[in-house]
Image 1 (spheres, rainbow, N blue to C red):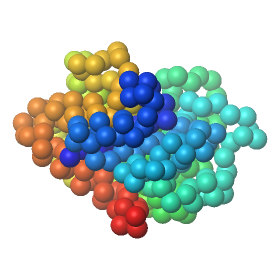
Image 2 (cartoon, one colour):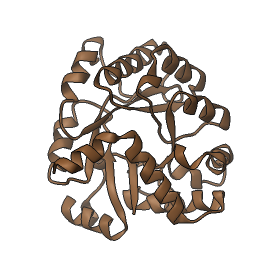
Image 3 (cartoon, rainbow, N blue to C red):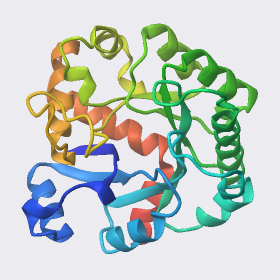
Amino acid sequence: MMIDSHCHLDRIDLAPYQNDLGQFMDHLSDEQISHLLCVSIDLDSLPAMWSLVKDFNNICISVGVHPNVKLTVDQEPSVDDLINIAQHKRVVAIGETGLDYFRSEGDLSWQHQRMRTHIQAAKQLKLPIIIHTREAKDDTLKLLREEGADEVGGVIHCFTEDWEMACQAMDLGFYISFSGIVTFKNALSIQDVASRIEDEKFFIETDSPYLAPVPHRGKPNYPSYVKHVAEKIAELRDTSVEKVCESSTRNYHRLFTKVSEFAAQE
């Protein structure tokens, strides 16, 4: 069985499944997908996300605002805002948050402050943090250190950096999560990390509906395509797909301990 550790289920086109999430989840079960983490990118969409997943015990969610979401100063969530919203029993993580210097320009101090706010909330909640970072390697690591993110740890999702950053992130208690990008021919530095990382330190994800892996590149992405990520990592590590899935699943439950607690309560 596999876990898609990062998807945006509320943004996936369910038309091929008659817009029926139950039918979609049955398909995922047939594809050996046991669990999904539906990740928030803004707070306005959270009520609809909760409503969408409420009947499915194998879907958990996160609370956060993506660094590419522009808000006014008055709209920015405070630490208390995030803490209050994260009281929902399905919430197992804070994020995704982080820094993105690829899509944003100019004074990005607001991204820095937003990331700090999320880390502070995560520490008070004792929840792990989901980090998005793009072309912001040094500042991402700097903020994680300055805010003491190692107290709760987390995951660098959709990893696009190099071995040096992976090592520094892992030293701070973060896992490295590989998306469909690892299957791209030009993703050599990411493939290098995937080949070298310890079994105890990585996840697999889709980031669906974005970044579909080969052989679906350029098309809408779905959680079932996480199998292609697992297959590529197995190839790079000269091991079995089963071992990759076992390692990533075990690591997922180790970080997101609330997943197991929630399942036990149901």
